Length: 160
Image 1 (cartoon, rainbow, N blue to C red):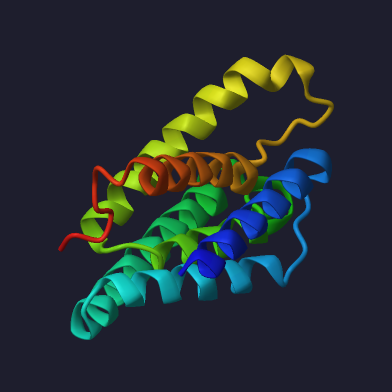
Image 2: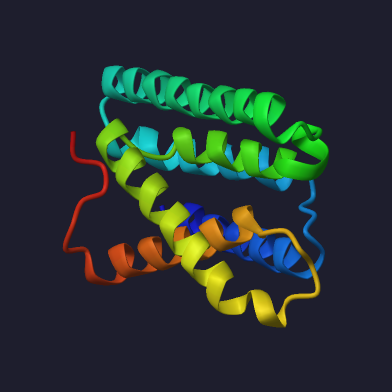
């Protein structure tokens, strides 16, 4: 389990560094993150709860991405994955969807988006890019959550 946690930390670290530096993330980091987080979720939940919560979470992510796409298509009228939203961000959402039970996923998802927005508002003056490194900021938030959880062990993220 310690090796799994270490691999998750390393993977999140690479995502953070790449997204903050160049707004690009190596494609293999996101499926590997999804696999590592899925294994961690599987070992901390019952089989039936793992499958049920993963399917619900993926459904929520698909609905959110569909609504974003429709909003972009109808109102902004810009290419969705070229100018508005990154493919890495969508893959990160899906990786996060397999990581937690539904209640925990929604809480972490919403607060990581709020964290990303506040961080961007504070740091955008220093950035040379116009876009938000969403996967990077969300990875920072998830890394902080995991480190706090693993060091203190006060709250079980996988309660159902």
